[in-house]
Image (cartoon, rainbow over all chains, first blue to last red; front, side, top):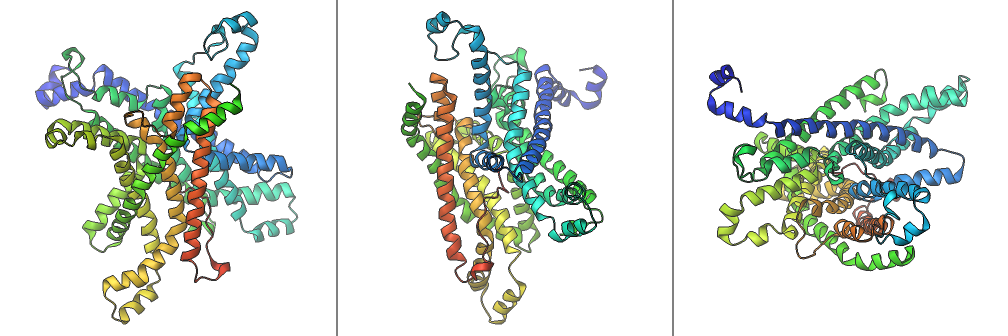
Length: 277
Length: 249
């Protein structure tokens, strides 16, 4: 802390400033990037998956329709945290199984006493970045199921008369789909998609369950009672203060997202009757 | 052990943990419902102080993750332990997950449910209210005979979803709170089993099956209530229950 700043703010405030800008706190601030990154990446994956699944749900081929409906209903029917734990573990095991088919000899398999992986060479360790990507994709898969049902409903909500009018103008089926149905679908889908986005933002708090050093894990570490003066001031259990910061952070994020979606809705609804509803 | 045998043995070993999830839901939903009605009335009231307070409470609890709320309340309780709970001799009780879990879930579901009921309160037809006043009904009578029946009928489909999702949210409790005496819920037990034999497909699939089945039972039960609430409405005008997750943590 430079002297001139201490002179301006006084030594008490300077000590606090010192505390909240020490190395561990800076790492905590940096870890907010994981949360926001996972939300954005997960949101993008969810949107793509949602659109794909909603499109497949209108397919002429029955098994495809069933698969899409099954994806939407099963993923929505179990808690997000279950899928969030299950998918990365299952993905890792599937990879290890594929590696094991090449890497493990019969003798090695027989010699291995552990239940998994089949042999030591097949053991995969993911880096933090890989876990982060996996977590984001998992969030995308979970909320893609929610998004697909929103988009499916919104596509059906476009007034039939408009589609018929478009056909009467001589548009081809493809033109009707892209220029009228999908163009208008967004207005009906946006309220639901904004809901899905809020859910996704809130479930980014689960990242620490996949051993990612996210904001929750740092809050836990920084707030834990500190008895060593070299690690900053000695303090009792301050965890609730740190969690309070996270609570405020998430509320602020919700508030910002709300404002963003309100703006988006107004923009998407320019000149549309449905936007006023 | 084959995959099928693993499934069958998991169905047995996850049955008791499932009861913990049911306990969390059953312990928090009725209290949360009563509090939510009061909070929704406060939100609806013309007094700005009451209405603002309710609005802030609802926004704060709906805008933040349940996971953080659990951590927050638990760590708050821990900090108060030495100064407050231990002198009173209630520390074992207040810090126990079987108390803290329902406490946080109640605070949480109160906010979500209040939002639903508040939305429904605003749909009560003004004409019916005027008629009730013209009959000289007392405020309580108005609430009992006019406002409440209308509100609950409108709110019920959304409330059904809230109950289902509260039940699913009980999966988070033991990730934030400590496990005491091997009392574990579905997720905690499935994770525990996973670290023994690394069979991710059997354990999590069975846990998911339990969640799906119990959610479905809740859905069917609430559907029966919905039919009763709408008994006087013509069949083609009734609102059918739809599995539409609008409120989740």
